[in-house]
Length: 241
Image (cartoon, rainbow, N blue to C red; front, side, top):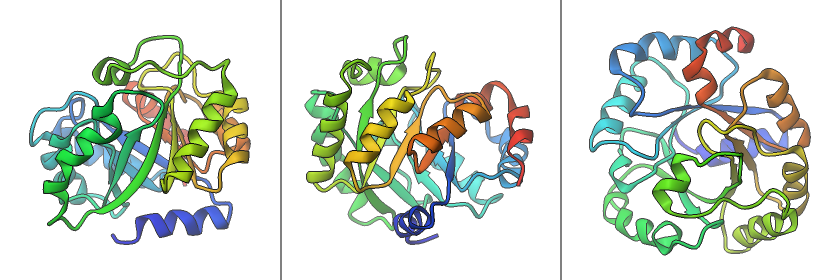
């Protein structure tokens, strides 16, 4: 699978709603992959994201290779660390945590990743990543040692997303975090979307068809769902093609 980013741009230009299923390598056993991917293939999902905040070395590589056996959907790495980079995926979101001020997650981890990426076939997609408060501490907050952006400061969130665009990012990702108590608000999504010309990804805390629809209506081009599927695979039945 090539040209993942261009395919996203093409879908956005046609107002097509994109849906990524996020699989955490630390939570998905290889023997469960065939059945899980079969359900993804039968759903309206357009992408498979793979990544987590705490993942052991080589776990991601094994998982991606197994997923590849069962799906033709583009597999995009959503790495929490350099150890999660594998050449068996199709693309990688080169995430810069622009909502935080920890230099490791603004540029430090990226420098470490270069040696792995220079001889890789992965399509590298620069992504401005904004962590938004959701009512509880998330793994992202704990691992990166950064504070989420306050929902009441919408203009600061908008300006941060715009700064990411001006810095040359290709995507903007609004993240409430895995297991979030509530998703990124429609008001935040719509205001950010109005300010940028980039595809907008929204994830974290989306646990129903209604919440998905609200995110799309507010301006999300791609919605990412992970925990909802982990906790209730029957959710797939509501997302049949």
